[in-house]
Image (cartoon, rainbow, N blue to C red; front, side, top):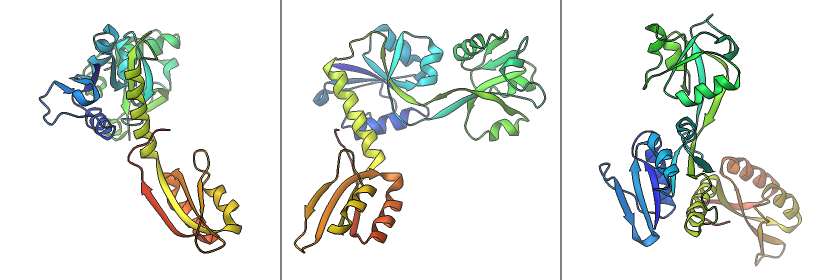
Amino acid sequence: MLRIAIPNKGSLSGPASAMLHEAGYQQRKESKELVLVDPDNQVEFFYLRPRDIAIYVSSGKLDIGITGRDLLLDSEAEAEEILPLGFARSTFRYATRPGTATGVGDFGGMTVATSYEGIVAQHLADHGVDASVVHLDGAVETAIELGVAQIIADVVETGTSLRNAGLEVIGEPIMTSEAIVIRRTGADADEPKVRQFLRRLQGVLVARTYVMMDYDCRAEHLERAVALTPGLESPTISPLHNEGWVAVRAMVPAKEAQRIMDDLYDLGARAILTTAIHACRL
């Protein structure tokens, strides 16, 4: 039975469970459940603190886990990323009061407050900067106001909370993060149950990214229409009862579907339909 670690709370928890449900796995109904066995899929889920997941996976007690790339790197655990999942995206950056510094090269002799001590210490070392790092759990903006640090390093989305605290983002991003699937470093990459799990998640990612598009067009316009909807390998084309017309079916990127429908209509295509894809294997 495959043993998988899942975030039990926070921004990773809900989207991870939703993706697993779309992939055909049972998920817990109560937030208090710590373990869930899915006998039909031969999987056992363990709901753990997101920061602890890399440690459990690196120990070999659990086969794989879903966590954040930032949490994996900060843990310094012997685990590795095997699949990005495309949600819970964030950017990790430095911030300070205006005029204090313009980039990481100015941090020498200063103190940086962060909840991600491992990432920051490595980043400073990579840039040859001799600065102190103090670990705080959350609300790191207050560290500058209280004189604990001159610089903070944290996840930045809109930057509103930083501006409200009188701070500004400086320098280049330290890293970008998102939800990822991890396994123990050196673990068997060809384990059948792991491959099946990854195929299911990849199917969900594709289903979320593409829609199926069907339309009818005149045969003389087919080449131009196919150029708009090339599909993944090639579109499916079938003759219609009315001579000179064909039906076309192809997968297209969901974010471009409306534009493609407009272009097809201008080309003379009709009966243009899009259908959501709930699951797939490529």
